[in-house]
Image 1 (cartoon, rainbow, N blue to C red):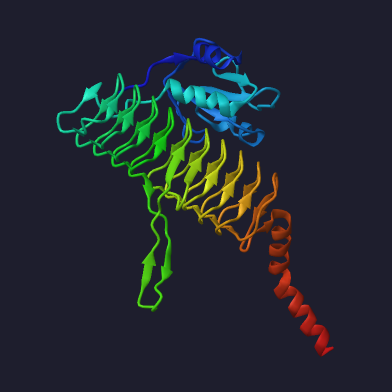
Image 2: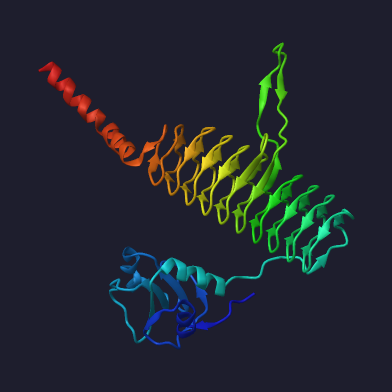
Length: 344
């Protein structure tokens, strides 16, 4: 499907921008500064990108108010100045979003819906979907092909579960959530103990569930284990990337962001507005305070206070870890100088 055509003026109106240049310039797409062609809209999210505007082929650029943009010709191109380029980008991407495959309103003939399930109005249920006994599917929910909903599950209104998602028994998904392809919610946690005679491992049953708040997104192939005794919980507004593992009885606050490859051990507690970069591992029972940040590939083995940035293996305060890395890089030179002094 081709993108709709907008103009510099119509986009400026949507994002409440001031225009430097012609308002009637047509915009037919969105691209990066380096990949843009004539007619494209691009973004300069910080001053360093503004320096590349003169070499870009983009017709329209969004930039923060007050940032100097050298080489701008306001007779042939337009700058749209805004308070927050990233928020402006979100609005523009919405304008140009493409059509996705989604079932028609109604229930596909191949779907299996238990008679005791409650199905809301305006639902879209695709082929091969299974909805178990006493499950509740809210209004305007979309279940794409081959979604599995276990017994006594609740799916809040407006949520969308992409192909292959599994939500096992007794779990709760809030309103306006998106679970991407092959997400698994409510599998047993990883819990075993040695048998009395040491003949093998005894499985610990997990009798809790998973409770997911509103406006949560969970990326493809991520897993959220059910609690051993109570709930594994994810707070409102939290966004989780692909291939993330959330262990049993983990508690995650509101508006957190987790990047791909992160793994949280059992009973980890995460505050609100926490940012976790890619491939972070957090040991069981650790606590991470509100607003904390954890750098990529870190191994967290201790509690992290609110507002602090940590990095490394084992993770510590980011500034301390950076000092360690600098010292390590200097070590060969230091040792060489020490050896020279010893000889002298």
